[in-house]
Length: 187
Image (cartoon, rainbow, N blue to C red; front, side):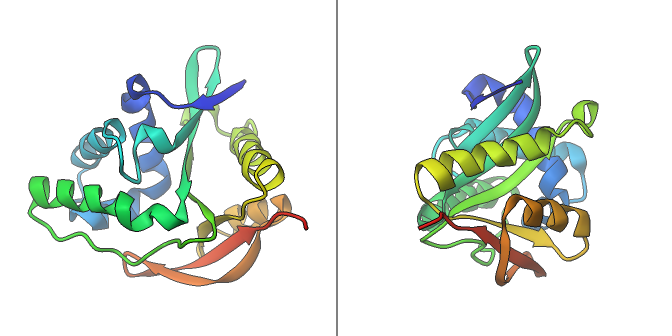
């Protein structure tokens, strides 16, 4: 297993994995229930630089030359800038206004989503990816990592808690309330 920064050529493999993790919310963003439309549009965003879902903000897990998982992560202080290009693309392609609630803020590196290929689920890949991110950002760079977890996903919350994340509040995104969790560096 190898974890590396994503490259533009990974876009067609990254988009379906990101969509696994945020399907319901992404459908709300573009007002569709079509998987094909959502995946195609998300792939176009992954290929573009300077937006939330860009390959620039992704790490991939590679196993035997295949992408098994992905994490989309960025500095919360850059959220407004990163959302701006997504908003322009949604307006251009769907004639829809995009201005969701802020899911992160300055002071944390935000894990937007993590997706693991169904072919590789159950092998601890998600946990290893989180451990990699915690090591890279919390331990080495002394930065706070944050994420949102769905109240309806207690299994994910247990995983995050086991990794050291603590609930710090709630946030609303796409009309739904999520728990906001963080892991902060040791002093």
